[in-house]
Amino acid sequence: MSDWWRGGVIYQIYPRSFQDSNGDGIGDLRGILDRLEHVASLGVDAIWLSPIFTSPMADMGYDVSNYTDIDPLFGALADFDALIEKAHELGLKVIIDQVVSHTSDKHPWFIESKSSRTNPRSDWYVWVDPNEDGTPPNNWPSVFGGPAWEWNGTRRQYYLHNFLIAQPDLNFHNPEVQDAVLSTMRFWLERGVDGFRFDTVNYYFHDQKLRSNPPAQREEETPLEADPYGMQLHEFSKNRPENIDFLRRVRMLLDEFPGTTTVGEVGEAHKAIEIMAAYTAGDDLLHMCYSFDMLGPNFTPQHFRSRVEKFFHGAPDGWPCWSFSNHDVNRHISRWEGHAVTPRTLGRLCAALLLTLKGSACIYQGEELGLPEAELEYAELTDPPGLRFWPDNKGRDGCRTPMPWTDEVNGGFSEVKPWLPVKGPHLKRNVAALEADPDSLLHYYRAILKYRRENPALIDGEIVFHDAMAPILGFSRYNGQDGLVCVFNLSAKPGALSIDGLPHLAALTGVSNGAVLDGASLKLEGNGFAIIECGAGFDPAAISLTLSKG
Image (cartoon, rainbow, N blue to C red; front, top):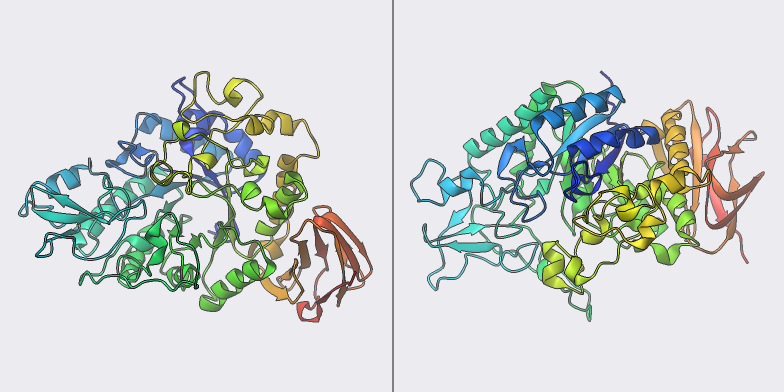
């Protein structure tokens, strides 16, 4: 069976916000099923569902209390089975979230573990004695603010929670925990899922010596952030070498189910690319990883080039999954708006760039509509970080608001008030309106995805970057049979350059935008880009880019 995931495109669905089918204001599995044709029409290969498991929803499903059942908010196992059946009929693979670095504090495992120091699951979570003065054992912080340790009066011990207090960390040093987690994965594989996205995959193991993390290096006079988590190098609270052996166990399980795949989320600010490479090297670890390196504010040629080159230098046989937006970060149309001529030109540029880089790609729901970050009032928030760190950190609700399907009330998402509001700028960019506009970003996504599928060089071909002055980013994709030169203007100002080494019959493709190619001369409008077909046998080493003066 071919490795469909290698160069595949995954569409992330945030179930709470995709489509409400039962009138409670919250999206659900039946709603996803009803809207699945829209996803299939884009030409993607798979869908990834954010958590749908039983949960108290302290962190919107990322606090799981039952790994082998569906939360009633989203439906039932029968609805999940129906969704898998329809997705497969439409040619879509189904990947589901696995949130196993921690559970909910309402999970039966934790309820038993905290009951005493002698129960059968007493060592399933990370329990430690206090210091002599009653303080926690070290300086590890929680991602969501405050220390990563919470006192339990029954055991007279602290437990570790890298996220909310209600999300205690499992103790992966215990083989029984590993076995239990793998058993829950097998449950879903046997039910027909095509793979997993692993939340916080670098958080599974902690340093058993409980050593304090060192400080991160900071530039002089750099202002402190609202959240101090980034002030440490998290050398001991996560990113531990023991993780590699567990990931091998995960891969052994997946290999029992041909055609399945894994995508690991690396949550790390200082060495994410290195971890991505380490976790995907060879053929016995994860199939793919992504990090937040392309989900931040950086929008320069050097940044994009360095991330890709660094990854493949560290893992020539590894595989990345790049993305520009997801449920954890501001939508890129807003994040990079300072570089835009218009949201439409920026949206096209980003789609073309993401889908021509070497690697797989993930598209977050609403990207194809060019949705901006929703501006919410404090009273509308539900996300713990936003509630804690407002207004410096407004949380993640702004990227999680419901999909606008029509210009009707609530965007056609629900007949009642939704769990998060649908704001005016989103209503204007609803699916029906963009379907009716042949020049819309939605139709461009379909065109560029179709072009990608039809060009093997973009699926798994090599990539060679070409030196060029900012704001130009240029690279070639080739596989020995087909060759492409891709040039992007990452600014709102027009530019011109010459491309030496192009074959005589090189031609600009229809998925280019704001570009004119005349021989070796290329003119690019602001946010313009050129995807140039060079045919078989062209030499990417012969290509050179020279930015014109003036």
